[in-house]
Amino acid sequence: MGVSRLEHINIRCLNRQQTRDFYVDLIGLEEGPRPDFPFRGHWLYLGDVPVVHLTEAADHPGSWTGNLARDAVADEGTGPFDHVAFRGDDFDAMRARFVAAGVAFRERIVPGGALKQLFVPDPEGVMVELNFEA
View 1 (cartoon, one colour):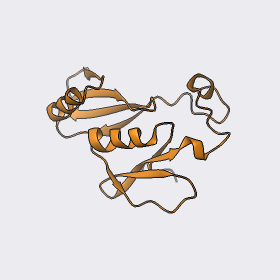
View 2 (cartoon, helix red, strand yellow):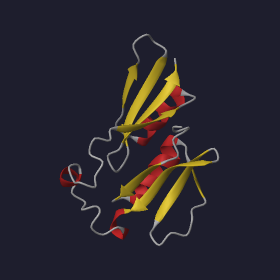
View 3 (cartoon, helix red, strand yellow):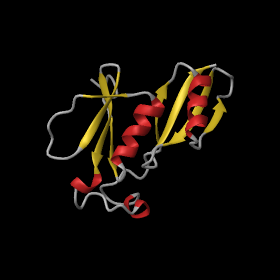
View 4 (cartoon, one colour):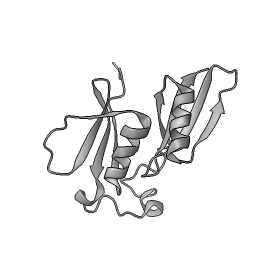
């Protein structure tokens, strides 16, 4: 017995709407149905799977201070979490989208040349890696 797939990541947001717009407008996820939780948020879908959950940090008092340096080492924090990766289907189009939006990103070709990658931080500081077949 083990795991069979990644269900979702959850990001507590200081800038929830801006973070939602990043994942929808730049990355290409779609906002979809979300249960009626007693806190604000968005569920963002890749196909029929809600892979990114966004929640309003202010709705979780005590669990997020807004001080990123302090929270990175907090007992409840996820300080070692480095990035989330998605498979992309059009490197040039995604790169052009980032350029047009004026967002900072970096690109890399994986040694051996099988993958091209784009790296872009979301508004909450989570690094997003996009992988494309070369």
